[in-house]
Image 1 (tube, rainbow, N blue to C red):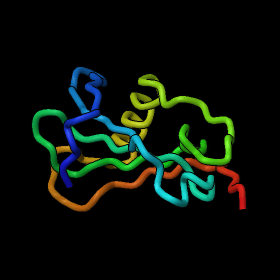
Image 2 (image 1 turned 90 degrees about the vertical axis):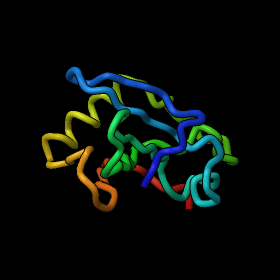
Image 3 (image 1 turned 120 degrees about the horizontal axis):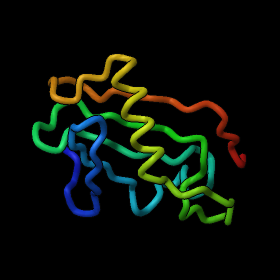
Image 4 (image 1 turned 90 degrees about the horizontal axis):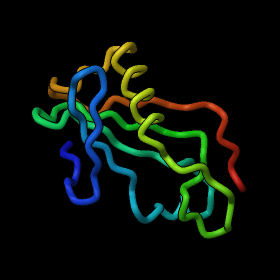
Length: 108
């Protein structure tokens, strides 16, 4: 799974470079705040297994006006470190590694 480079941001965590991207337009479910905001991270030089992080926040562009915290680089760095600790191998091939954050409350 390759991350689209347009709109992605570079971040360095523990000396390794990664690229991360938050979907610009929410999915239908995210727009109605039925599901939380997610973003994807991959190794910058040798993309392999992507990391999909599910936050405990609604997407910032949700249609119903639920207040959302922005995804900060410090949060991305913390998620990368946690995923590495849990066994994410960013340069290995394979399906995406999912990291779930607890605490999202749906608007439905």
